Image (cartoon, rainbow, N blue to C red):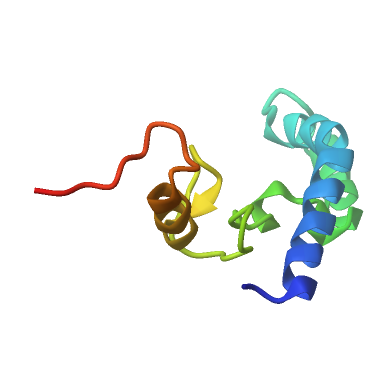
Length: 101
């Protein structure tokens, strides 16, 4: 089980990223548009830098919904390999069957 503080910090980052997503996208569009004057693009870059760092989507870490584990994460199932194995063995994940040969 991951530390509760690490999971909560990641949840705060996710919420901030959602909150600032539209503003970040608009500023990034101004910065990337080569037809804009360089001064306007530079001002947009400065405004982008003033936003909280944790509002960047890149800083959000994919974590297991069950255990909070940050490594070995399956995006499709939103859980780690360990949680998947445990729940799959118990028959709680649809479509996952214990293999035997």
